[in-house]
Image (tube, rainbow, N blue to C red; front, top):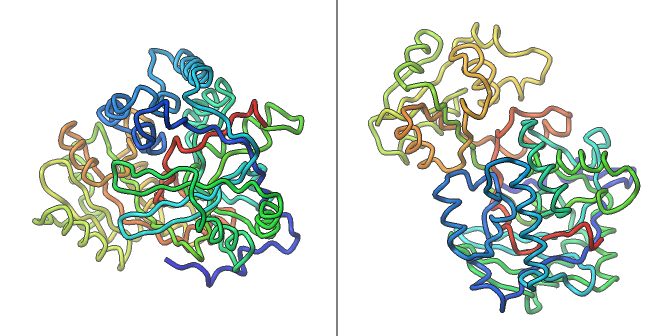
Length: 430
C-alpha cells in the first residue's frame, strides 16, 4: 500500500524529528557458525510455539534465540543465562564488533516483496514529543520481561521496525547508492527470504541520512513492547549516554510499502460451542463450509460491510458479523474517534471479550498468534476458540497514531519483519 499521499503529514515543521546515530554493530563471525541462516530467528514474539523454539535451538548451537528467548526455570535465571551466553560468544569470537560506527542498509526480498531500510541507534522520545508514534497498547508483564533481559545483557538484541513517509530525501538516495556495492553479508533464511546487509561508514553519507530524517516522524510498525522497554531503561539511566538510544530499522513506506496483516486471538479456555451460544441475538452467525483460505476470503468480504470475525476450533468455521448496534453503543467508550470505535480489535476486546464472553485479558486466557493456520490448529488441539481477524489498513493506523490514540494491543502485524541476528547493538560499545 503506497502511502506517499500522506507525506506532508509526516514532515515536522520544527525540524525536531528523527535522529539516527551510527553504532558499532555486533555481528556473527561467519567462520565460527554453521551458516548465517542457521543462527537467525524471527522476532521474539513470533516464536510462540515450543516446537518452533526447539527447532531454532537445534539449528545451530549459536542461534540468536538463545539470547532473545533464553530457557530456564525462573525469569532471573533466564536473563542471567542470556548475559552469560552473550559474553561467552564474544570471548570465543562467535560474535565480534565491527571496527567503526556505521549505519546499516538492510534489504530483504521474497514472496513478491522487496524491502530496504536503514538500521541505526535512534534517539528515544516520548509519545508526547510526537517523533515516534506508537499505535498499540502494551502488556506490562511483557515490558518487564524485555526490560530485565536488556538490562542484564546491556544489549539491544533485535531492531524494532519503524516506518516513515519520505519525500525523495537524501536518506533514500543513500540506500539506493549503497545497494549497488557488494554487501557485508548475504543469506537466505528458511522462509525463503533473501537478506543482505551493508555498512555505511562514510561520515558524509551518514550526515546525508541524518539530514534526510531530521524533519520526519515515524510510526512503530513492530516492537511496541521493546519501545516501551527502551523508554523505561532510559528513565533508569537519566544521564546522557547509550541508554538514550535504541536499535531500530527505519523503512520509507513511500518507496517500500509494508504488508499489514492481522494478529489472531486464541481463547484457551472457551470452547467454540460456548462462544457461539453466547452470541445469540448479539451477532449474526453463519457456518462456512469451505477450507481455510476460502473462509478467510469470506471474512474479508464481510468486513467491507462492518465488523466481522471468523471463529474456529471445532473442525468448522463460523463467520460472526452484523453486531447489534445497541450492544456496541453500550459497550464501546465514546471518548474516542469513530475510526477507533469501529475497529474490529476494539469491538472484539470491548464488546466480545469483556462483555459477551467475559474473558480476562491475561496470558493464560488469550494467546496472540500471527499465523492463521497455527491459530486454528492450536484451538482444535486445546479445545479453545480461535478468533481470526482481518487486517486494518495502514493509513488508519497512522492517522490514529497522529491523534495520539492507541489501538488495542496486538491489533496489527506489519511485515516483512527484520530477521533477528544479523546485527546487534551492545550498549557497552557506544
